[in-house]
Length: 79
Image (cartoon, rainbow, N blue to C red; front, side, top):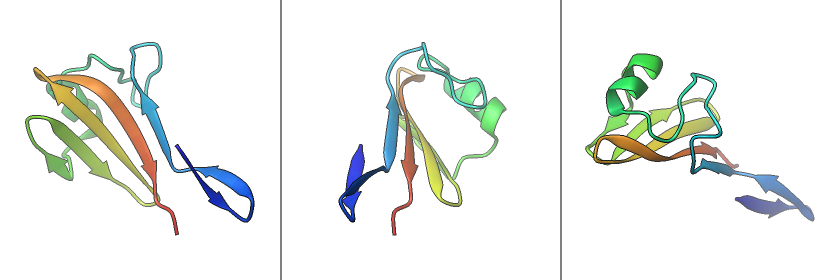
């Protein structure tokens, strides 16, 4: 997803929705919550359906269903 700024579109979110793309930690859609925590450490937020790692400038979110990642989203902090 993008947002406009001075007639230029800037990326503020990138969503991975299949296993062909991986995070820098080597995680892809289909990873279990245990795989995610083993690779990324303690989460900022963790529920049965969401694991979030809040970072400086970017957040990494794993959306879960049946303990497997169904999508992975990088959200860049704007402003």
